[in-house]
Amino acid sequence: MTPATEPPLLRVDRLRTVFPVAGGEAAAVDGVSFDIRRGETLGLVGESGSGKSVTALSIVRLVPPPGRIAGGRIELDGRDVLDFDARAMRDVRGRRIGFVFQEPAAALNPVFSIGSQIAETVAAHGLARGAAARARAVDLLDAVRVPDPARRAREYPHELSGGLKQRAMIALALAADPDLVIADEPTTALDATVQAEVLDLLRDLRARFHLSLLLITHDLGVVAAIADRVAVMYAGRIVESGPVDRLFASPAHPYTRGLLACIPGQQPGPRLSAIPGVVPRLGQLPRGCAFAPRCDRRFDPCAAAPPGVSSIEAGHDARCYLYGPDTDGAEHPA
Amino acid sequence: MTPLVDVRHLVKDFPRGSGPLGGRGTTRAVDDVSFAIDAGETFGLVGESGSGKTTTGRCLLRLVEPTSGEIHFRDMDIRALSARDLRRARRHLQIVFQDPYSSLNPRMRVGDIVEEPLVVHRIGTKADRKARVAELLRMVGLDPADATKLPEAFSGGQRQRIGLARAIALEPSFVVCDEPVSALDVSVQAQVVNLLLDLQAKLGLTYLFIAHDLRLVRQVCTRVAVMYRGRLVEIAPAATLFTSPAHDYTRALISGMPTLVPGQKLDRIPYDPQRFEKLPLREIAPGHLAAV
Image: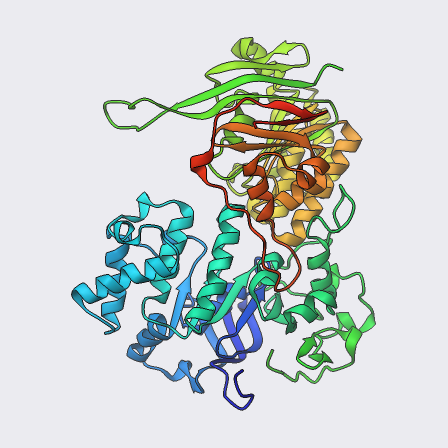
């Protein structure tokens, strides 16, 4: 166990990332706060437009322009990366924080063999050179359970199946021995059987490499399989966060409840429980709680102003007027 | 009872390679597939990417020309139809695609997209068709005023509703739903699935429901066929398939289904592709066929 006094590996504090919209700027990420401790996995759950991927890109300062980080702090081991120069940021990306994307094609270069790409990353961060770097590449492919890793290392991305490409990308993310891996929908594009294998793999790697993991997904099934804690995002804000078992056993926010309920297989069919309405678009948020127009529990205060954070129990928070009048705008870390 | 759709020994070969000198042989995407769908069913077709499920669905409508085999729809021999008769038959056979972003023409107004099949089949006057478009948009939960907008004004779920309105415009009896919700947000998936079920009840539709989300297939399908490497390995009522799978591949597929129990490690059963044998389906229990 990590002593409670140790600072978190990553602390995101009141992050605000904005994009231009007609008539000004809109916050895709609006006051998001959470901590990730060493060895811990946080599942960041949300649908399209929730701001979950923009949050991930903000952490490594890769928000695509004209988007920009307009406020908050992103502390890695207590130091705000927003103060880092370009060189220090390059060290953060790759060396301290590895990235796994939904689409391996986005990360793998088609004209280099898998092994040489991993070896290059190993060398670029000064961990090994030449033959030693290539050997490390093969070791990493072995660690992500690529069969016959020495042969596969010589192959090009197009020669690998979707599942193997995903493993190669995970190996690439681990190449510089990072402390934190950010995985953005790492299993969404994979077939069900391969998806389960990759989740098993991530779980094992986390223990073996003592990794912290920020897992970004729309799939609560993926979160249940691997996360220690969960933060649910809606329209740029974290609306609920807590330990995974508590959040699944007693979801507090009506949005979380709705998301859980609409997963098939929980009630006699064929109809599903659905959340009415659509996810609001950036720059078109209602004045009060962003979820209120779709919420079956809305009442008077919901339309007036966005709710603040209420504590449900220790470590379990929700932004919802059902749990108190807290509108002081207090920001508690997730 | 005669099935609504009866598929026998369907085969589809695609040329392999596309170099300047032509292909080097063929790849068999669909390999001797036979199944029958009764009127009113939601018949699930599951399998991993590349298993041939999408090609099978397209062959039924001859959007892809089958290489051999038979496809019967009611008393029609779909493969024997002339191009003209096939166009007429398509009134009854429709498809909803996975990607609501690429399946709608971005330059056409929503009303024109939904009206197009009515125009092609020369149904009604201009005024009749406008009224029908308004009715169809209402049926799929959209506002008739949306007819004047372009697809870009709509979210993924709303676009899928537009695709559905177009698919049901000619009052078909059979609709191939090819991964109809897999590109949608979770909270919207359930809405669109419920809409599919409502339309089915209201219009007496029969669905071929192609999907990779086994939880969803289990929830909505009456019977399910499992496809692997172009072949059907099992067909069973949904309840039977998920509780008593007979083929090793089906068992592997089901064992990887995600649960909502935090921290529960799945007891996955691996499937070794080397063990795969091309066997014919045989009835192992009433209504339960497996290639074992």
